[in-house]
Image (cartoon, rainbow, N blue to C red; front, side, top):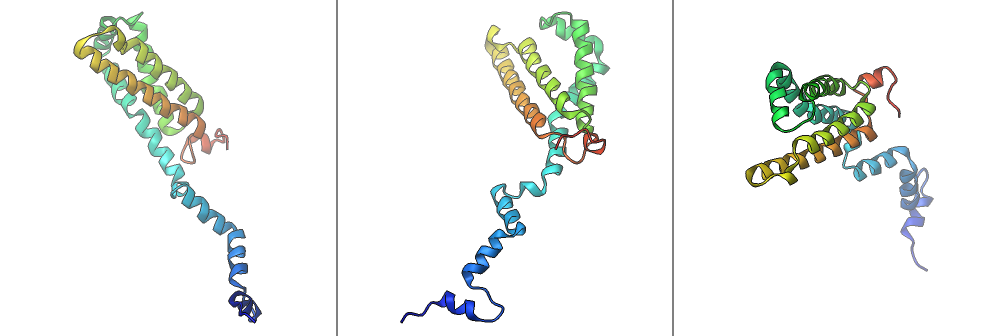
Length: 180
């Protein structure tokens, strides 16, 4: 006759066998939450705060240089003309509007998904218009290659923001514009 420890524990009043205890714990929502947390390394606990920080960090470059373009409009037009951008005056106005106003809307989380797509298209377009490294040589080639691929990387961030949305800390969430 062999002794089964697990069976013996199940005979005690008000006690579960270890197998029953483990199965019951795994079936509880809290246990599922812990498993989910482990699978995401705890990111689910700070998801909305991280999305807010990501929105701000993603558009910081555009806010800084948009303000610079706004306060030095003449220099912006001259630079765009020098780099061969078509219709430099109009392009400067578009750049200022997108970099200042659209970026600000993303920071506060207003119409985040469509504006993230707009910013992605804008970022890719500026990469092709202003950082066409494949037509350059020397140091200009190297500098513009870096900036072109920086724009491609930022495009990835905007695509992710389009998929994830603005999160809880946004005007989209406040006004019910955020799709769950």
